[in-house]
Length: 411
Length: 63
Image 1 (cartoon, helix red, strand yellow):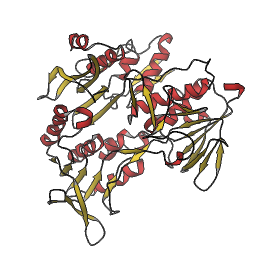
Image 2 (image 1 turned 120 degrees about the vertical axis):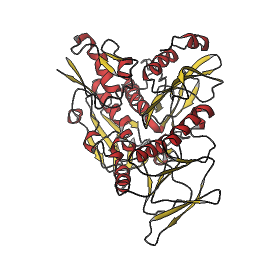
Image 3 (image 1 turned 45 degrees about the horizontal axis):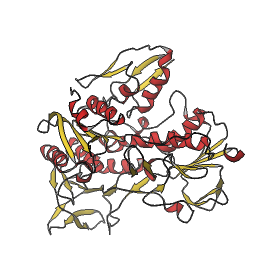
Image 4 (image 1 turned 90 degrees about the vertical axis):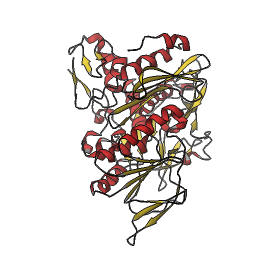
């Protein structure tokens, strides 16, 4: 490996999708040394997207969530799992990760994949019935509360997680109020027009959606359980269950003072390298995506997996500049399932100067819209149009000009 | 190699089609069609990529 230094012990901090794919790739590429995964949760890697949908509704049991490598079993990866163990520090001089309790785990190579955690509201009280949703344990706790048949569920934040929880709760027959501080749901991600399509989707399914409405505070009943939510407009809603879905924060606190650059994520180069022998992947990593000329940090399932694989390859290539390392320049992609709609977005929709519906209609909520930046196709949004989204994603990969994308045959 | 899709899990995200178009096709009816249930060994890498990419883990390879 680099500078004649051999890679004998790789430590992956983070036991979710990015970390698992990194481990799998290291083995797949022939790395035979020691592998340790430090995971803050007590569980082996599992799949998070079903937590707001199939697990919440009870359609799936948790036995369906476990992630494994393709074509082999998780035991075959020969990993030492240190689960339920939180990294609290990184000593780059000593090449070791410091764990809560003071243990140190030495490494030659390090994969930072600590992900993100959900943001709490300012002054959010610790009342029974107020939930965040990120982990399996969060999901099961919320499910228990929804199964009890609450009279009303209040969702704070109409982002993708909040929207999915609202959709699932409606499908369980529960009354749902969604509070969104912005005038348009998903405004930053989708823009005004498409954001209002999402608003219409909720309202047509009986959600009491309140836009431009923030939370002023919570009130408890006599038993310390949430009973009502006070709103920024001076009114209030009764609430037996509250779900707060107002975004996530990258887990970088353990890296403070380590010498790694932390700025809304671990800052990496275009190959996902954060320092010699240190790479990062998933929600926690920020890197320049040259395809879009933009430094990004993605919170997508698809990216966790791709970047985990890419970062592992970068680590194996070492720091020797003569060994070819490749830039990580994916076309981001994610999906959100709400009611009977499959919403998919590929590429970038922020900073678009043009948006055009190229297939179907917004009224039917079955359509494809494409986003353009400076004469190029930059993004595609589909409602129940998976094949077309994939075709336009390929056009984005090919660097298609806007006119070319418009001329591409839809349907 | 035999490709097995659990259609109860499949949600037609079409990522498999992007990875291995010779084997997987999501059509305009939004359903996935497996074009070759026993694809040739030469396609193994692509099919494995499709297995990995599937957000629902709905695809399995037997043999």
